[in-house]
Length: 460
Image (tube, rainbow, N blue to C red; front, side, top):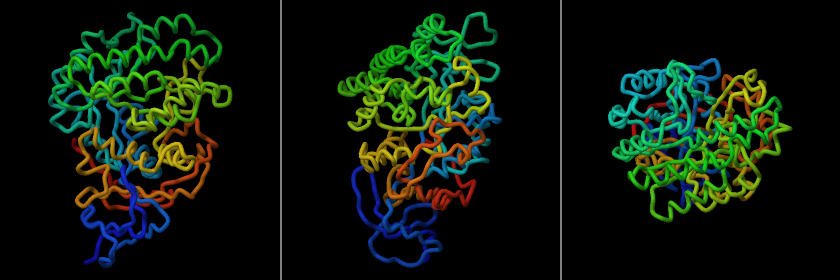
């Protein structure tokens, strides 16, 4: 038999074990795992000295498509993903139009499918009474989960976030009150899919922003306006609502060390609470603003070294179950505005894996833990673990091969996103993805994307 692809001599790494074996791939699936020589392949990869991982997943990507495609689009974000060792992305729903009902879901599915260089799942957005009745149908259509931007107003013209809401603004969906949020929890709870929240308390932020906003570019003032308390209050409320409704709650982009403790205690109670963080919270801190300027600005904001240490601890002990990029490009010109006006966000999908492999190289996490937080747990939590996040016979042939001996320096100019915006320019990493394999197709080799448009929609 001639196989479509053979990966031989590598060390296979799962969330639990490491072992040496060959993978034999046919029809986009892993057909055989064996130490024996079982024939020829149309393509053979010799992975000697390298590690063969189940395809890595970025669960939190904003590709701006449709909408602000001058900043990014799905073709370029998934091109970046492929270059960075990611085989699947979960696309966020605050697009124009948003993924808020069946019609817009179908429109976005057609749009993204035509541009997908890696596989993709689609989040649905929760807008309170605006689309409460649509959530059940979105579940049937196969969305990966539900996203609620807690504490944010939305512009009803384009469904973009409104950071500085005030009541006199026109055609704006105000931040929802707790009763409206509770109804979201109830409705999502019926689906058994994840409700993921951007956790910031808008009322507190409004009050403190009025107090601390000024003409200076003082990052400490920004942190006073958006303190850890803003995240923690929302997380505590969300945990209580999850307990009452039975909804599965996921805390997005955790930035506060204290949040880790709240999640851990909820997990000890047996509540279905999970959380994620991002490399910018793990590697950067407030003291770097003078060096990095507005490249450091994300929401929730990057905080202090002590928060960083507690986030690493939460990853190491399993309280935080996944790491994602929160890929959110803006133009370089926008990021050069003053601190208070510059948009929050940066590119991330291309260097998520290298940064976390560097953490393996420095001993912060093990390679098994990396597989757990970037592949197995995301697939398990989103109900796709029969196909993704595993290396087993019958699973999809999504594979990331990594070389822990390779080193590079992250450079803004090397980003494949439309916008070249990152706080990690000049950051040296050890450990790199060297092959990205999507549905049995080798789409990246040694950092170069060699085949495009091989991604497919993942129905959950």
